[in-house]
Length: 312
Image (cartoon, rainbow, N blue to C red; front, side):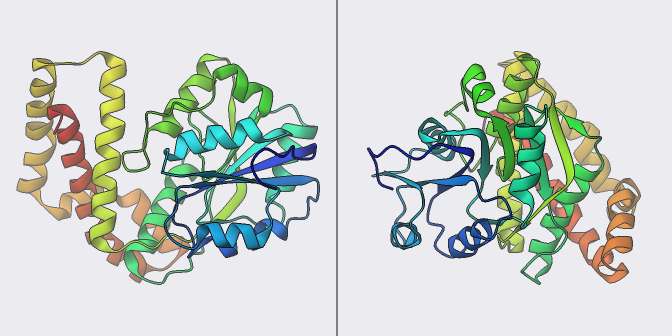
């Protein structure tokens, strides 16, 4: 369905923003089409793509297709899709994600048939790319989610659902956040929490994440995310001016200097929980290879926090 047409009423709307997603989009759409839940629509937003995304979406015949002449940003695109949706429940999915056949049905049981206002899932352990950086990043995110209980205070737009009336009540996503520095998920979670909405983390709601990372792209990604998230936190705390520089100096002295002096051996002790989990759930060899990469990754995150403090 194209712009201007009225989509059919349905129980659940999948909101799918896409920017240059031609490589992963076909598998994402095929997985959605294979869902056991049949009463849903796909609302796709082509956010100014320059690859074959538009042709793929047109050929697939999604229920609602919105197009931006130039990128508006991933959170603006999600708001556009949510506005155009007609489902009682909005399920946000990224274009590099493959849902399981029962993902939509589980979401509906929580937020449609059940009493939950919002639910998120997590990444599956399986990953389509065999290189270390991709598998490490995927495993790290999964492990970090598994550490939490069933109720959390953030949202996850890779696979996250909210009742449409709740989305409208909290005012949707803040559109000032971008995909590079992130923060929009955290901010939306804050808005839900302040509205009294509890987000359920369903650890059986696992999806396959098809994004490929190299070592350098991983470090750059996590530097930018740490910079964005730390900047968001500092803004909320009202930390400005010379206070930022003072915090930066403290962080350097407390965190970076001991790491440099003590080295990777001590860092392995600090990171043992993840490495033990990786060894038990994947292999000892995988855990050992992750150790060095994790050290570099957390250094990149530390420098990202410093950059936020110094507003670099």
